[in-house]
Amino acid sequence: ASNELPQPACPHFGICGGCVYQMLPYEEQLALKEKQVRALLDPVAGNYEFIGIKGSPKSAEYRNKMEFSFGDEVKGGELMLGLHKRGSFYDIVDVRNCTLVHPDFRKILVCVLEFCREQNLPYYHKMNHEGYLRHLLVRRAEKTGEILVNLVTTSQMTVDMQPLKERLLALPLSGCFAGIIHSVNDG
Image (cartoon, rainbow, N blue to C red; front, side, top):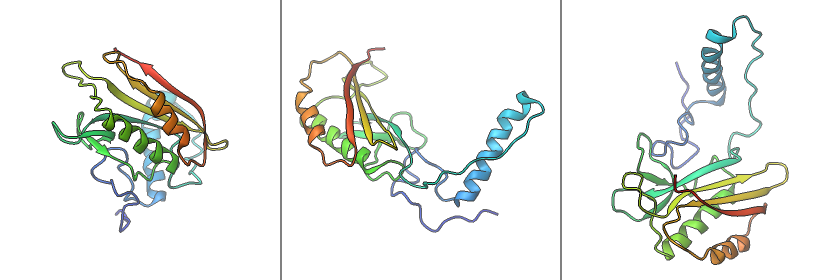
């Protein structure tokens, strides 16, 4: 029998598809991971020594890379930047309070979303291949605090990204930017 925690650590738990095991005590999460790894290795590895799953020293704000998607929370709704709703390929959940990532991620996400809303930029619709905004990729090095931001769009519009760059550089972050990139992907 599982010992579920009384409260999920993240306010988006259950709606967002980013994490599904938060209600399990960490020891049970590690046991589940061991079972999954063994299920993958046993059929192909033959005889091997399994030394176990090493736990993380951090139980929150441990992700060093996130890819946030642009879309809407409901069809025809306001522009959203976040993670996919659990069980949905299209609906996006606002995850500005996500506990998987460092607070710097959350500040960057909000900054980019506000800029894109102000500019009335459309997100890329996968079905009809129209729109501009695709993804926001954020990486942050644990040891150095260096941050890389990559905004991925299509080439269907020309937008001056200088004001967004200036806003990002003005954010009160504990880390520092190593790079701010605008990538174009029409594929």
